[in-house]
Length: 112
Length: 115
Image 1 (tube, chains in turn blue, orange):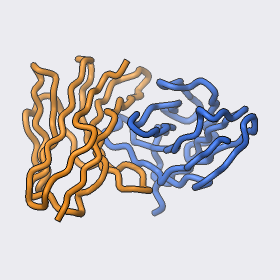
Image 2 (image 1 turned 30 degrees about the vertical axis):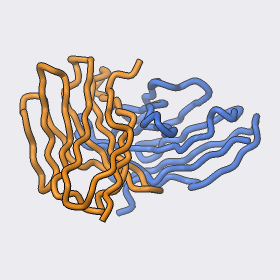
Image 3 (image 1 turned 120 degrees about the horizontal axis):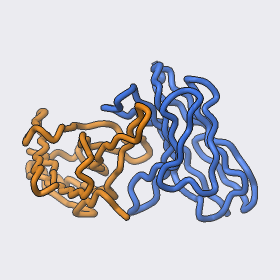
Image 4 (image 1 turned 90 degrees about the vertical axis):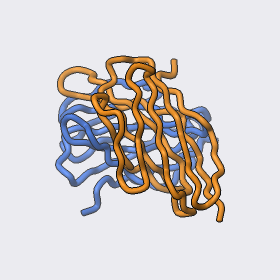
């Protein structure tokens, strides 16, 4: 049972490049989330998907887009990467009611 | 606007001592308060959680104390061990409609337990 799997684990981009961060969960969870973690800032919600077919903005959505491809997969896209998007990105999933969120191991992204 | 304030930012405790991390919130609509533990290079993992109708919850060496009137809650780690060295995040859950919930996280406390 893999839980929440994120790919890639590390990525270096140049300013203006685009990329998609992938996330998949095998726990049959309805809800999925994308966070970014910056030093001293905690975890901030970028986007979430309460169920397949729905997505909503979180606290810091600017510069990002998401796709809930199916119940298992939730991707995060940076259309034109900026240095301010250098961060560690975490995907998470939860059952309905969200008493527990399960996190992936993160993607460490540097934008030069 | 930060809705969950966590302190201290960092904490150094001797082995066997008590580690205390505090959080305060403003939004009275929060209805569930988990604590997450994160080791370097890993994602956060749920440690312990409490509902606002309970004043204290204990699991092993970890205890949450909750003060609803003061809108504060804290994590106590008894008999702290070097293996407890990690970053701890408090969080608060809110309902965002259509059956979905969000967590608002504090900024984290880096705990170092020295032998």
